[in-house]
Length: 137
Length: 334
Image 1 (spheres, chains in turn blue, cyan):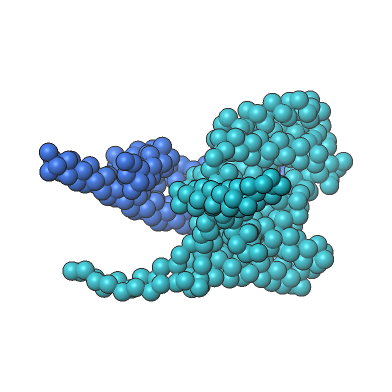
Image 2 (cartoon, chains in turn red, cyan):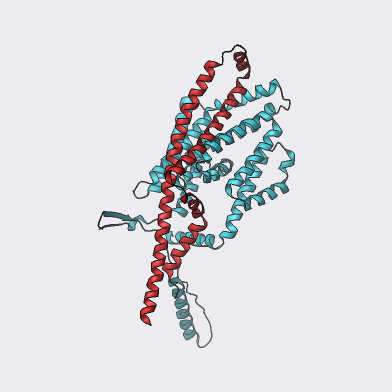
């Protein structure tokens, strides 16, 4: 007879393994700190590229005044302001990245724990069935 | 009446489960094709790309690839059309898309679906439903995605309305002037920023309210989300004189409410009249658990009456009815 409970558990396991489990399995190979730091490096690169894009738009918008400032050697103040804004933005962005990836890591750990518990439940179910069969003979 | 509605819901969900392999690609094809048609209609500046057959081919390709790849294809299509109009419109759009990718979608790649659905929702006048549905089904971070979606949709709408002015093919001083005009129009579009703020706030409010441990939290969250949207839009209109069309806003919110309630109906239907509060303990903790049962209906038993004029009609009729009832009960027990 089909064990409905076991089929349900196996279906849930299969759904997880084929869906979210693929991404979670990749993350499972990292320690928490390595995972967070690795992604924060990625966030640093992304944030820097985003800032460069904004600088590009700013330069295109103010190109005539910028040219005058460059010829008159008055860009020092502007660069200083830009670097201050960049630093403030990066601190904020990296802090957000830290919390997001820490939360993601913890959530993935939770899913993996649930997956492990289901596997154990399945194993117990088979063991119980084997024991039952042994007792009959 | 209510039981019939729940039966229909159950049948729809069962049918979806049974034919998911057809429905899911068909949905993706429909979204992709409708998006292509919308893009062609509003910013279809490149005649070669507005070909319907090409649209069908691109939509078919989109059914085979993940949602994120589909979003990338749509972005390329939009940029190609904008490039045909003018370089500066394409550059501004590319910068917005890049900022979206670098600052937000890097954290939450699954939310690109909102970027695809928001322009369609604007066309169908149910745009107010998107932040509420995002708050119901995604996390609080979806507020950023919704906000970006509003910015890009409104930008494309601006390009469509000003295509005669922006369509300057010569690269030179006029290009820089056009670029400045576009950036100014984007930054000074108070209606757009207020709408983006309203949508982002609504998504966050909905997310936090639907997680509150109270009965009807989803319904309360939906109503609160719509109230927040309306309040911010009306307050913004009064403060910054954005000239929003109140009739359109109220109609849009009303239509969106229907969509939001449908989403609630299919995704979260529980029976608050049968809440059970249980308390138990183990070695380490006391547990106070509130269990809210899902609404479930069993299949109704159909009795087929066969009326016959033959001599043994009474005996036949009783036999047939008893046979059908037995069969019906057996089916529902399964």
